[in-house]
Image 1 (spheres, rainbow, N blue to C red):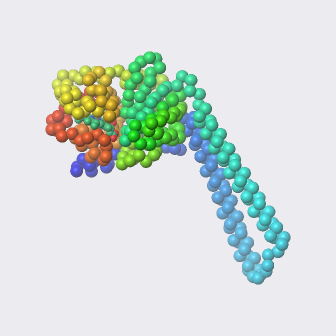
Image 2 (cartoon, helix red, strand yellow):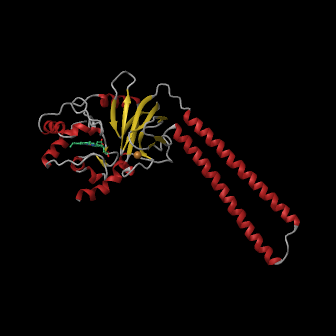
Image 3 (cartoon, rainbow, N blue to C red):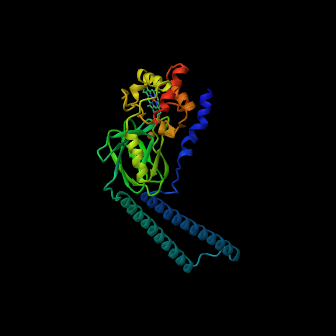
Length: 336
Ligand SMILES: [Cu+2]
């Protein structure tokens, strides 16, 4: 109970603290284009709305004045003709503005798909209820590696993301980098983006996908090519063997319990694939798709009863004595 009360307050804030998400603050070429289109549409619609209000006011004032002057006078033919002229002009103007917006819309769409992708970084993003797996393909021949919910990309280099889903329809969306793209089970789609400035950008699933759709977030950290190369080299490495003591006993527990059947820790016999790759889990700022901050107390609560922090999560609760949970937390904490 205490844990579930706590969950409510940590859940919504965990990833907010680590990453920003704002459609009005684009950080990549494509997001800038989408933002521009949105601004043009907004200002056009506002101008049209204002013009309509002014015309409406004028008509009302006019009608009042006329009623006061000659209550029962029939409209004169000359006035009817002028009215027709105004209506025709307004209709043509509306049609022209709408057509112009359609043209801008189509040309923005075209420009979005024309990002040059030579020398792109390739990431395969797989959506599951309710978390993300990102598999990095290393072009220098290094081994592929997977991370969960925590992507890093180099600033200025295009990224090609292959989108897949293992269960239902999810939608990949990082508003500051690009628009939305669906992830359909049994199919794959691609999306290209380029981050043009450093920062951590929040992404989220934008298609209702079940109970924890709201707690299916991830982050994209754009950093200098050098820092990215360091990150990539680190993530690609297998886990260091834990130091003797609590961590080592925790590892033995991890491998003998159900954990290893669902989770992979590269460099150990744990090769499960139903849950996130935990090889470098301690390097992530948040856990369970942005649900809570990665700190020992919450991690322990998660291991005992994942549903207390994220109702419906597909990781089962474990009936472990507190001492075992403490050892597991000690071990996971060494997976930097
Ligand atoms: Cu989803």
